Length: 178
Image (cartoon, rainbow, N blue to C red; front, top):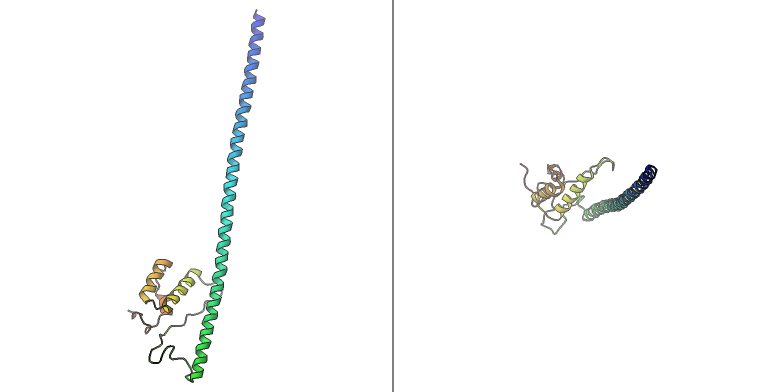
């Protein structure tokens, strides 16, 4: 009987070990599956984010390319306008253009904007602010409107240097300097 009990106990212990091993294997397999799913989800998310970053970068690069093209076109336009004004002035025999509109209407004086140095030297943010300020001045906006726009939209703390280069004292809407 003792031998039968011993044999039953050993058999029971063997069965319990096998069940415990099987349970351990099952739990390890489930943990691996969960870990694999998590890794796969993370990889997919990183891939999505990477694709979004690449798409946005391409969009920014495209806009930068367009910005340079617009700048080039504006430079050409300014040169063409200068040449046309010079040609008109020469045709009128005045040596330089005094009037741009109908006779009796004074020409608003704009100060020339210095051309920037090498492309790597200029601050793109300030260049964009200057360009917008020039466009607003040409469109007839007041000095105060342009200053407010530079402060609000471009976060330019002191817009006066930009305004000084664009507005002359006799430009309509320009405020006298204090």
